Amino acid sequence: MAKINENFLNLKESYLFSDIAKKVDAFTAANPDKTVVRLGIGDVTRPLVPAVIEAMHKAVDEMGDAATFRGYGPEQGYGFLHEAVQGYYKSFGVTLDNDEIFISDGAKSDVANITDLFDQANTVLVPDPVYPVYVDTNIMNGRNIVYLDANEDNGFLPMPPSDVKADMVYLCSPNNPTGATYNYEQLKAWVDYANANGAVILYDAAYESFITEDGLPRSIFEIEGAKTCAIEFCSLSKLASFTGTRCGYTVVPKALTFAVDGKDVALNKLWLRRQTTKFNGVPYIIQRGAAAVFTDEGLAQIRENIGFYQENARIIGETLDELGITYFGGVNSPYIWLKCPNGMKSWEFFDYLLENAAVVGTPGSGFGKNGEGYFRLTSFNNHENTREAMARVKALLKK
Ligand SMILES: *Cc1c(COP(=O)(O)O)cnc(C)c1O
Image 1 (tube, protein in one colour):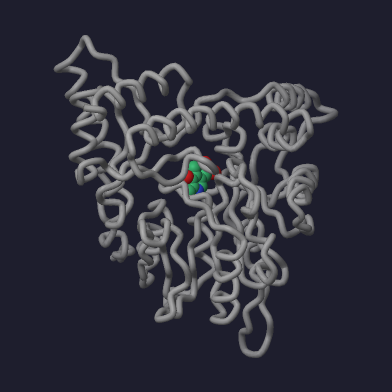
Image 2 (cartoon, protein in one colour; image 1 turned 180 degrees about the horizontal axis):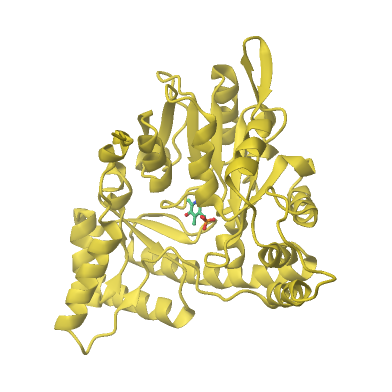
């Protein structure tokens, strides 16, 4: 009889987004005259930019011509996209070899699949509140997870613990859900901790393109020593509206090695083997679109989209400032993480906003115990809806 992986039975059901949908549906049914404004969704709203569309159209034509048709491509991505990503990293001072860059169908898969390279006995350090993928994939593998408190005291940027020697550390900066972003000094402390303990940092940089302030690293590889301890995951999802188009990349430096029986084993080699065995690459058409993102034209067009979201974040922040509500993020991130007013709990504030302002956000408690009492708003909407939502919030909370 087949024995199942019983670790799956240890996963907690996540009802967060279905509970939100249920409550919103019930409210809409009871209040057909009211228009609900949603600032809860973690998905982009701006369309693909013209440079991407043009490159993909051209690639479609190539696929329809026997002379330029392509079948299976390299599992780790085409050279032209490696070069495009390499050039992008160079723009913030990071030098990478082509074969340190692995193209994938997005950061979620890579963040999850990277666990294949690590032993079950490793101790995993995960900040709380957190993007649920880090936790659930390690539960599926039966690893021991230690949570690191991210809270108001540490500005939602926890630093390395002195009492835990973790083997695998997940960091997400700019953070989903809190929007908090590590600076150079803080990341250096993490790199030093990892190198001292022989730990690996799994660095999720999905929101790096939202960083606008000076003095904040776009990549962990801007930190000295990171190439011997870190893997970086990035995605075109939030950078270039690829959430439905699917493309991301993972950087595994060749200097990241672990000694086994006196021999150095490079994780870069293991990841290549893992990908060539279990993955057959991202479609050529998508990779052509992705490469166009990193051209001067593509980057200029994308900057406009990101600026559009940043204006929404500014509108939200301005209203919260006027109301004297404490919040994090919103500057280098599409997310605004606010402290629920009047000591309300996350779901209490959710109900209050929905019932009295028909505005929807995401209860912070859905991201971990330290999220209780907090609430996430996103800038992924248009200006009109964002202004309308904030006008309603202001009218409600000013009293
Ligand atoms: C959106 C997001 C990603 C990107 O996932 P894709 O699979 O590339 O769409 C990765 N990490 C975090 C924290 C995210 O919020």
